Length: 381
Image 1 (cartoon, rainbow, N blue to C red):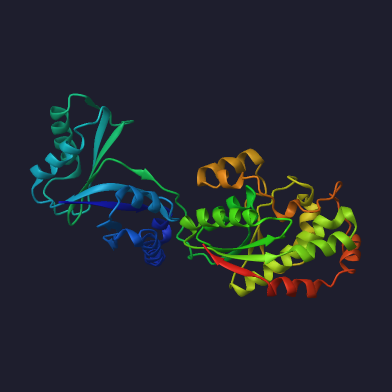
Image 2 (cartoon, rainbow, N blue to C red):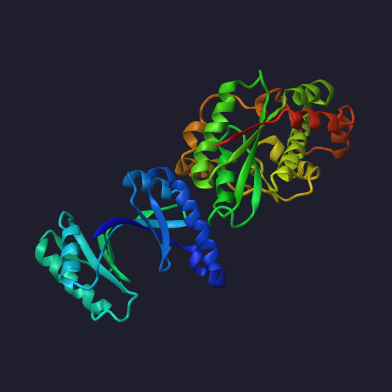
C-alpha cells in the first residue's frame, strides 16, 4: 500500500483521437510543477499519478494551479485481490468523519468478482458499523468514499478542485501587454487557461515609473507563471516615446497615440516570440481610451489578432477573478505604471483619425520604435 495523488482532467476527455497529445502535454506540465519536490509523475490507464513527493500539501497546491487539471485526490493504492483489506482501508479512511456519506465504486477491471453495486453496499455497511457518527445519504452526502478497481485498488475521499482549462502550449502562443494594474494579469490568465502559452510586454517609463513598479509587474508574472509554466517578460524602455508624444502631440490625443505605439512594439515582440496574437486587459468604456472608437484606432496599427477576454466585464467581475487567481493583492500595491504618466485632463473618447495621424506625423515613429526595441530587457519568471 502507498499514498499518491490521483490527478483528474475534464475537458481533455472530449478530445477523441487527439486525447493522447493533450494528456502528454498535461503530464509534462504537472512534472514541471513538482520537479523540485522529488516527485514521479506518470500516465497509466488514462489516469495521471504523482508519487514519491517530499511535501504532499505543496504538491497539491502547485498541481491545482496547472491548467488542464480539473481536480486531484490524495489517494491510497493497494492490491485489489483481498477485498477485506480494501474494505478495512476504506473504514479506516472514514473513521474520523462526521455527517453523511456514500460509497462510489468504479470497476474498470470487469473481471473483478465483485461488481460496483455490491462494493458500494458492502463497504457502506462496514463503514456504518464502525462509525456511528455517519449516516447514509446517496443524493447529497457530506463525504464520498471513492473506490476505483483498476490494475490496483485506489481509494480516496478528499477531492481538491483545480483550475481546469487546457494544458499550456496546446493552443499556440500569444503576447500579453502586462501593466501593473488589475485587468491585464486577469486577461492573460484567462487566455492561458485555454491552452495558450503566453509571454509578456511591459512598458517602463523610468524615472517616472520606479524600479518598485517594475518589480511589481515581475511579481505578477511570477504569480501567473505557476499556471502558465513560465513567462518571458520583455521590459520596454518607454520614457523617450512618452516625452516625445507629450511635447509634440495634441494633449487630448496623447493617450491614444501612446497606446498605438504600445501595440506596434508589442506586435514586434510577439513576432520575435512566434506569437499568433496579442492580449490586452481592455473592457469597453472602462476608461477614455477604451471606447469602441478608441479601440478601433489602436487595432489599426497591428495586423495580428488582438484578444480582449475582459471586453464585456465590469470592474467588480474582474476584481473577483483577480482575487481568485491571487493577483489582486499585488495589483493593488500603490506603484505607478506608465499609463498614469502625462495623463491628459480631457482625453478624446471619440477620436478623429486625421487628428491622430497629424500628431504622429510630428514623430519619428519607426526610429522611436526601433530604439525602444533595442533597449528591451528580458526577464524569465
